[in-house]
Image (cartoon, rainbow over all chains, first blue to last red):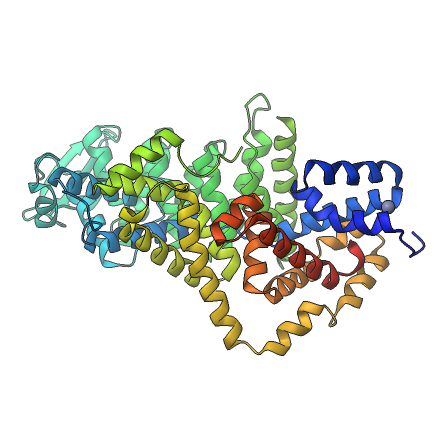
Length: 333
Length: 198
Ligand SMILES: [Zn+2]
């Protein structure tokens, strides 16, 4: 306290970090604890140590999901070229099949953060396009699977979608020959064509389709496609449309996750502002009875935005508000 | 809240054996059980998404290629982390060589702007707030990058990954005691550089 620490204090202070880490032996902990009982100065030193420890946490970074997903895709691509581990007795054809199946699933998974670039990603997109077209692909069984998917790459593509007067949709497909399909938006075939076309290379078409899908966001597969668009679409206009469609679903982990990614990393300021608006709106409307998961990552990202001294005052105010709401819901439960 | 990385023990043994027999799907499951914490470790140590991504690829490729050398004499997590930490340590050492030492040493001793940090804490009158200030966070990053690669590694695994010192020793091929000394040195340096917060 007055700068003169006695021996016990010196010894105790040295042990404080290990005490917090829970790495003291039983006896050591006893000694430290009993000194702390008697020494206010060391107790406040322990408090400062705790604060410092919290400050350390502030510099920790959590890799983005996009990075994780990119790593997984690259690894899948590398492993596809690897020979089996040395000593592996046998690889059944079935195994190769499930691996590819798994890989495709990984890449097309609704939460997937696929980077649009890269030959493998394109291959997967092409394949999805083919996959949803009935009759084009044989079933998944057998080893014709991967050949079939390669052979049919890009054979079927949505050219345009027009709503008809009766509320159904008129879809023009490009295939080796063109054909058309008519049906209501909640028709399974129509729906899967629309979902596949959210990855179409033509911006305008994606925009239209995403706008149509936002009216069906109560369906999980549609929400997943919108989340995918928010995270991956290169066109900010299309991303904004998808974002708006998810307004009513802030309570969903995936949706909140996507909003968090936008806040953390979307290069478009309008997207970030829209994201924080939706977040504030969604959270303030949220039913308090609804069990709310403590979204640490969201809190972290908002905190980080505040710390970064976001130059836009509106954005700063909104982040502050969102942070209060997220924290409030975290404290409730 | 956050589930411990890894898969249930029984499942994991079965998965590893299946992967060893050439089942790539099983291997994929093993990867996904641990890859997030591997990436987090690399990212925090190297502070570069590109480098972290390289470590990720190289680590899991090595795991894949050497899977049949895994004999269950330690946990899969420990084995994986041996590979990952070796790669990270190599990378950190390469950087040390590239960087000019003086900068590192100056920062490690905290001579540079220790006074600023303290002044800030006092003037503000609210140490809690200044603890979170951008300046202190920058400072912490400086000090972290001034630690030796091994100190950095032990600190990272204990503080951010929450691994026990015993396990850290096992991963780094040393004793629990040596890991503890390393962590102790890291903490001493941090405190010296971060002023009288502690
Ligand atoms: Zn004392």
